[in-house]
Length: 189
Image 1 (cartoon, one colour):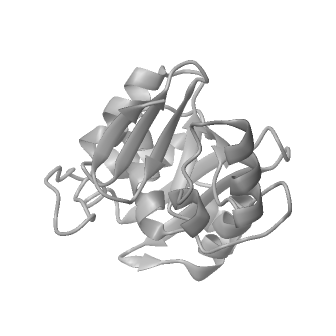
Image 2 (tube, rainbow, N blue to C red):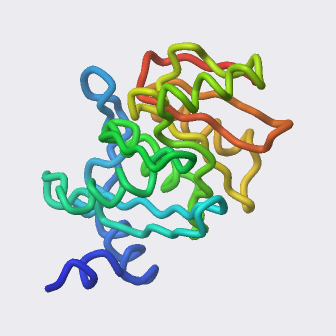
């Protein structure tokens, strides 16, 4: 089975896998959580970027192991699009994104607005907006700003909060949700 074969499961196959397994919803230690346990032993992330025109649909965890090639593809996709710099994206953030997406029961991929931000980009954004943190978790590859056309900011935030695994920021005016793997907290932007 090639990597392309592993990453291109049909919606029907995915639903069959998920339907055949139980979801354990209790958090388990640290920022880890059980929302993805029993999920057919796979984890998947689907995103597109309106800024670069790129799309990503990849299985990044199978049978208890993260897939290095998939993580590299995610790191590249979530790079700072302004200067091309990449950083390792924290797998805990990916897990929160994947669990939230499953809870939303949406076939639509996330629109990635911001993943990793280099220090230069973060500083430039801070000069333009008070809403950009000086020590943003985006600088560490631990945060993502996401949008779904088919779901409201409130729906997305509720799904992310259900993971009880990190920070969730609601930005209703800008129509996106911030998800990170830092301390559990919530705010309105």
